[in-house]
Length: 228
Image (cartoon, rainbow, N blue to C red; front, top):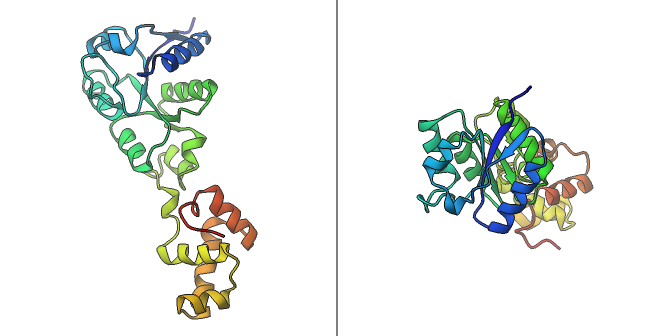
C-alpha cells in the first residue's frame, strides 16, 4: 500500500484555509493537518511529520513567527528537514519574487485563482522533485518550459521580451500607424522601423500584425500604455 502524503495548509484567512483543507482531504492519497496556522508553531509543523506545506506567499504563516513568509519558511525548513516540499500561493506576484521563492528551496507556485485540481497537480509534481508553476502565473513568463525542465535557472518576465525601442514601435503599430508614419513620428528611418517590426514578429512567433497585437494583449504588454 502506498504511503499517503501529509499536507499542511498555512493560509491565514480561516475561510480559505478551511475550504482548501477540506478539498484536499477528499483525495485518498492525501492526509491534511487540521490544526489552524494561527495555532501552530514551527516546531508543531516539523513534529507533525508533514510532507508538503501549502503556504500563503506573504504570510503570516505560523503562531510563533508572525513575520514568516513563504521564502523565509523555505530557508528555515531547508536547514531543518529539506525533504519537506513547500508550495506557495498568491493572487498577484512579481516573477522576480517567484524566482526568489524557488531559489530559497520552494518547489511549486500556484495562483490563488487556481482550482484545487491544479493544487493537487502541484503537490504531485513536488513529490517527484519537479518544479511546477501554474498556467496563470506562467503566462507572465517567457521561458516557463525551459525553467521547469531545469534548462534556465530563472524565470524571465514576459515584459522583458522586447527592448524599449521595440515596445515603442509595438505601441504605435497597435494604434494603427504604418511603418512610414511611425518612422516620421519617432524621427527614425523606415529601415529602422522595419528592423524593429521584424524583431517583434520573430520574438513573438507571429505572422501578421493582427496576431502580434493579440499576442501583446494576451501577455499584458500593452496594458500600461494608452492604446486606442
